[in-house]
Length: 393
Ligand SMILES: *Cc1c(COP(=O)(O)O)cnc(C)c1O
Image (cartoon, rainbow, N blue to C red; front, side, top):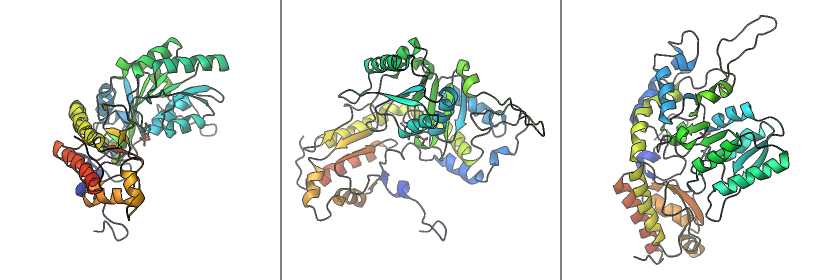
């Protein structure tokens, strides 16, 4: 079916059970789809923009209230919407990092954090992971001390991913933030895989910034996201313009420098806004999501040779699995080679696994109902048995 003359309609989430780790939390709600149609035009939220001409002051649609709701949602004081979590990292990096400044990330940090630091000429120091792929508070303390010895001062900023994108493992943000506080290091909480799918308490965790991704975890169109902070830090990261141009002598009111004035002016913001009531409710059902995820994980473990690389039992619906000694063994002799697995899944209506992947791969069960999770588990088992792998229990 064509969407326009040029390209096809996209229907994988209608026709399949999608387990692509990056896509499942960003799928639009029906309300967001309606908003997308109504507010698709450029600058559509600007109809009722009046003095002081800033996105977070617009009352119709209720964007002012939405900004307050977003801050409260992650238990912080002030929030702004940004075009993707990465632009949140960048705004914070631009505020605190100067050339040659040491900046701490972790061995499991996302590349967008690295680029935000690189853009400022910061010097990266990674907190190593332990044998279980966890970033411990001890390791964080050790790296801070190393930075102090090497640079004669602590890092200017610390990026922490609550749940990392590689394993979906949970890292002790609160413990690490406590240590960082002793050195006055601002902490950025990367909630790309948390904000919008589970409850996040920024102040409770003791962090300075909470960044979320609209299109990864808040059922919003791309590129969208949020950056929230405390009232202490808001004046820094959301500083307003003070410039006067030389010839015309113009000034620019209270536009925020780090935000480049306004950020999301149409379909992205309205998609976020329309999904928000649903998102606020769905974070309370995280336990059910974990039950579904663990059900699938249990079945994978029962396939001989399959190893769950993520921490176990799972605390997130994103899981990394090693099938080198199960499905990849089948691939060695199968006529479709490595493609047998993704193609067997596809035939049974499962989408989102990279074609040809049989060694180490990731999946995310977020947003499934119980029946779909049971079906996915049964499908993995069926493909295993069909290819003469031993399934125990
Ligand atoms: C996806 C992801 C990002 C990037 O999020 P965007 O909203 O696309 O910028 C950053 N960090 C982590 C851990 C991620 O998984």
